[in-house]
Length: 266
Ligand SMILES: Nc1nc2c(ncn2[C@@H]2O[C@H](COP(=O)(O)OP(=O)(O)OP(=O)(O)O)[C@@H](O)[C@H]2O)c(=O)[nH]1
Ligand SMILES: [Zn+2]
Ligand SMILES: [Zn+2]
Image (cartoon, rainbow, N blue to C red; front, side):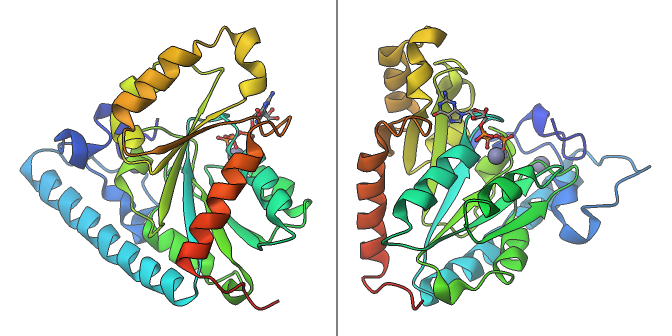
């Protein structure tokens, strides 16, 4: 995982009580220049980590205010690599297109493959290439949002970097944090990565079409999700076959109407 912040050491620091790893790279100015320095440790790193997290929380509050002023429903989609975030977001945006305009901010360590996949489906998309940083932060999202015409959007979906650890700590100013658990990655993921699953408002079992082939134990997965993501609204779907998508889209449409009953100007 991300060698700069040592997120493999603790992750979900604020929620697990493990504060000892330094997230010094989260200072945006330093994010792309790490070579040849020592990683701080001990009390100094604790203070630095806390102040960076406080800074992120302030910037997330600014994002939230911006999104509220624009009447946008904003989602932060998180999961392990390859769980199906891009496919799910593309299907969501395409299927909603007649009623709601969806824009996407997509974060990746390298390549703009995901952005290209979304763009070919006619979805307005902005790519953030994070380099070695294994999550998005509120400032990156603010900069990226400035490159979208927010007034023409109803829903903004942020695809986070594929990672079940670091994104837990970074509020991006979203209203809904959506965590995906695919049938091919193991039923125990919620137990292994509790901070991220616990922080989700929505938990979605994806790739349900592959459940039988993967020997997916549905009952166990749902039990684990109920244990860790007990606040979350749960869905089961396949972005590939479309099974279960309608229920999810109805929920999203209702959430958007609560945020702002008026459609965006086109
Ligand atoms: N069978 C099946 N395959 C799926 C489904 N959703 C995604 N996939 C496949 O799973 C693979 C990974 O999907 P992506 O959408 O790229 O996953 P991701 O989470 O965006 O991946 P990263 O951005 O790299 O973390 C691709 O081959 C998809 O076609 C699904 O519901 N069913
Ligand atoms: Zn990190
Ligand atoms: Zn993706």
